[in-house]
Length: 463
Image 1 (cartoon, one colour):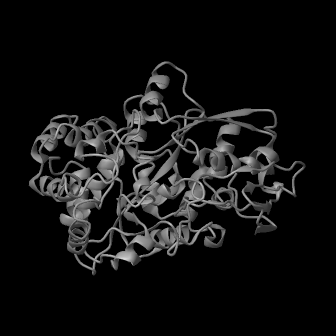
Image 2: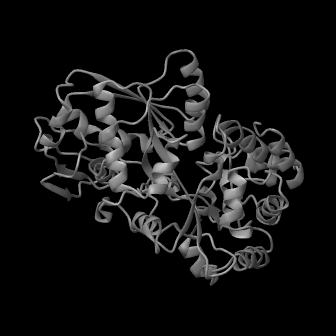
């Protein structure tokens, strides 16, 4: 049942802000809709050979339910990417999205009401669903074949628990970016920093040049039940830079304690920026305002000239208000979060995984589609405003909407990149999505010391 790329044509066509997926090889044609934030959209139109779906058999009239954290504005393009599957198989995909999905999914599992498929944002949650609830079914052979052919083996490992492969990777994220205003940098004569020390020096220079009127950094970690995760990204990026990838691996796997001195040092290094009242929180408040500022809005002060720098992943591109030009000469762009030296390039990455709670034919068919390069390219075409990439080998970079997306994909595919998966996503969910999120929030809100917060998190690690 493996879907391989057998489409006859794949083309992009401009059509204002409307998005149209035209399945000309099928009986019906999808209607257009608005893209996400961050600028004018371009329609994606492609032909697809429905013969590629025939091996799934007769599953017309069935329904597959999907539960995910992918909410608007990204939800619209996610749903749009399902149209080839729905049109060619006759299966209805019911999409449900919530920012509280990580907390609510285990509740639904225990209540006997899981979805057919969950798009899991954390391997740690995948591990919990398998080891604590025995809730997921192993991925079918068709999905495993797609992943073996289309992904680096490390991505398959993230979807594997105790030697059994459960969940194929979906999208991929590059998190080690700093957003800025090219025009503000040009006007002030600032250069893109190449090392961590350069970044700290630039931050201080902004304070000195503005007389402290403009704080160089803006940040926010509020995200509903998932509050805290943007702060854990910060810490993980800094651990990679101050302690290195080997120590990072030991920390994530609890081969060293969470409060190891090297990790405390990384918290302190991040705090040189995030807990420095001279450096944050530009246009938003004092240091403690980071705890209550929505992550979706935290970079917006850059557009008002009230902040120069905001660390956020490639997908933050979708959060900028509609009409924002994301380009090297545009309203905003991003540079690589520098390491200690120019000779190293540690990079924090992340992504989602497809977990299934039953093995009905239509569910396995949809899993197979989502694990294929057909879906990856359909998703790229269906995302006209950018902010989405994949590490799938067969994703055609020309289908990506923006130069920034292509640059992100280039980083993912660059053998020189020393990539490590989001640590909180790999840790046991009660830590990674629990005490680590909560602890980093209190680090800001209650001004806990680095030692205090790491001690608390270490004490919560399951035995």
